[in-house]
Image (cartoon, rainbow, N blue to C red; front, side, top):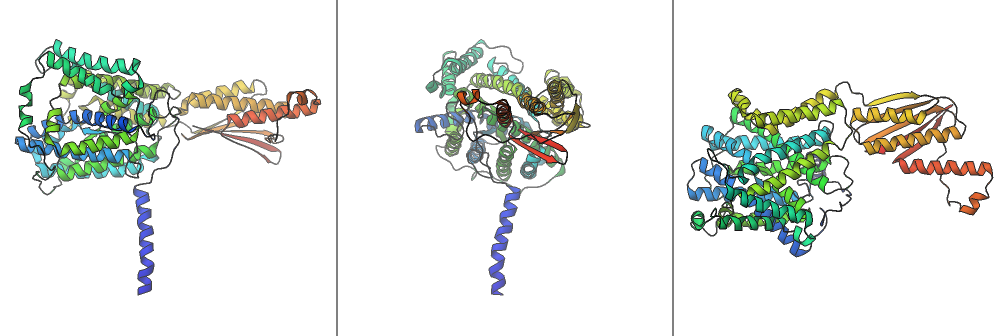
Length: 604
């Protein structure tokens, strides 16, 4: 019996580790090429003062959006003390999620992703709570969060469903959705109201400061771009009378210190079909939003960015799912990644993940001091409007860059065009939503949702019938040109990057020329295939395999002049072999009977 127990322990431990690795794969080390415009990249350690200053800036920007938690609590009829507790608990969980996102673990992305209360979640949270009760909201949130964690496990296998042009559409529409909130705040447009010159002055000052610093500012000034912009806007708000002491009266009544969550009166979660269905749809859309945000930050940090890092995206979604799980357990308002903070990272040129950890810690500390959240919730809306306008501009351009990072063909162009049309139609024609059935308005009420879903569906539809491999017999004359035309055509069909296709065409042309000079006769057959990771070209022909040996020492100029003709030809073949090795990421020459082949792999 003792022997049995002694052997079972290690076996259970190994099985548990395998299960953990399956559910939450560990992060894989990856090299990034730092872009020139960045001051501090993701894995770099900023100076201590910069680290603290940027962490506080990101935390303050995130805390400005705690107003949404205040609105949700007030809409559910909470008393002022309960509103403060609800808001502080929401901030605490978002801070924990932000810290986890900044850590390189199997549960976090290891990048700068800041959590904020989701403005789109306010109406959903309030409506379900008022109709079904807080217990039903908590149960639905728990189910939705678990679905997010499960979905993250399969994200790495869905690369073909989420190519760059689809995520580019998601990013572009995400930026467009920020325009409405940013512009309405910047112009002071309220329900039934008109333009406010004072609000325009506040927002204009905020935006002008951030833009000026981003374009002409010194590296040191870029680190405080948001703080300078917000400070300038607040000063103008005070001068124009948009911010006075009366607004701070509720803040003075808040307790100086309080433990979040403890003051919440939480029921036992209940599970009802209708709320679960609604929150599952919301969770799926949150996954797409998180996908786009994680990809945007990853692309910002790599000058040689090629494709979506699906492992990073999966961990970002896993972390958000775990954060939503805590929201479900506490009944607080769930959220997502702040696009405004991504804009701040772009403006400052600092994307260090440790900044995110510091920002999360600041948010956690602020959760224990209710007046902090209350004070920041009083930030003039026009200041937030200016920040959102800057962020919208950056996000829209980032989406356009992603869309155009691949070769386009009619199918891909229609995927992008029709998706953007569908999304913007909902935004521009709200009567479309009003005329739709009540049950569908949760889904089609957002142009971001409609356009994103349309992009995924059209991409899947247009992939039907598109072969992932193709072949051609090259003519005896003009082989290089025909090969280039063939690869260009299929590169567009597959959505490959243009620079990779051009490199492959150059390598194939060099190979055919070298083989002809070595005496190879007959036609060449070119086979090409693409799997989102590699473009593989196989050149087959009757003859001898191409020799790819490299000389140990290159001859000097005088030795080359003294070479005999056959020695010169041999040296030129070696030069060709060197060029082919340089153009290809992998290359192999083989012989099978009278048929030889040259296999070249180009990393994508």
